[in-house]
Length: 309
Ligand code: SF4
Image 1: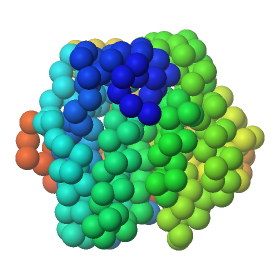
Image 2: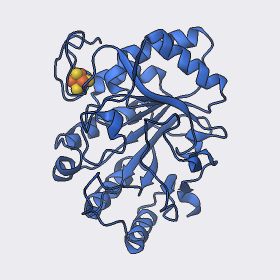
Image 3: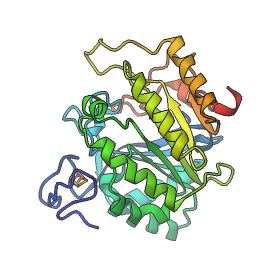
Image 4: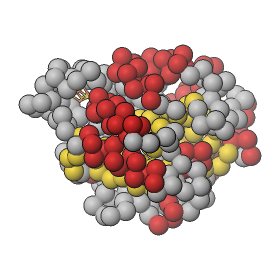
């Protein structure tokens, strides 16, 4: 795996990233937008002190609703700073030194070769945190297989299985075709999830407004294929794209219908976001020293356990 003729993600641009950029808008230098502790993730990932986040700049998807649009490239912006692999390894060690529960690599798909190199370097200097691969699910199995031996917890999105919904929200109808082989591969590599042992997969699904049928289809698919292997994380934090007020928030009745459906399907390992957190400013501002609201410093504030709902 390298950056010449890049085929790291399903876009398969074959860009020579030593000279130009592909759809992810990134060259061969690692670029990160922010690193630090964050307690807004699912409880096992956040732990007591927070997860040690590294947000990589750029993304192979260009979702229209992207909450990290300042850094993902969705708006043509790629806020962040280029760093060396050695500096990336030092950041990993520094997060460990700050007491992070986990190392959380956010949207690292397009930098897999450099991240592997940095993890090797960091381990050689005493790094030992559980490593979380926090991804859109828009991956190539062949590339993911290269970093899999370094990953303890997959925090993967499954945004939708519908090509229409993927086209509307993710800007890539092919998302739906790409994500299923990824889920199958991850399940084959890690058939069980044990969050006490910090191993396995938490599969995230964000409910899109007006697309409840897509969520119902996803929940049935999850129950049939992954209920015994993965935890579920059902997210309801959708924030309308900038300047687009045409998305109604999820109603209480719709939320309750999701809870009922999960009960009927026997899905009880995992988490769902607490609808009472409706005043949270979910969209980070990466131009600030700390992009997240102060409430993200609270312990486990945003997820309810499915077992205790
Ligand atoms: S990682 Fe970037 S350059 Fe490589 S195939 Fe994907 S979008 Fe293209």
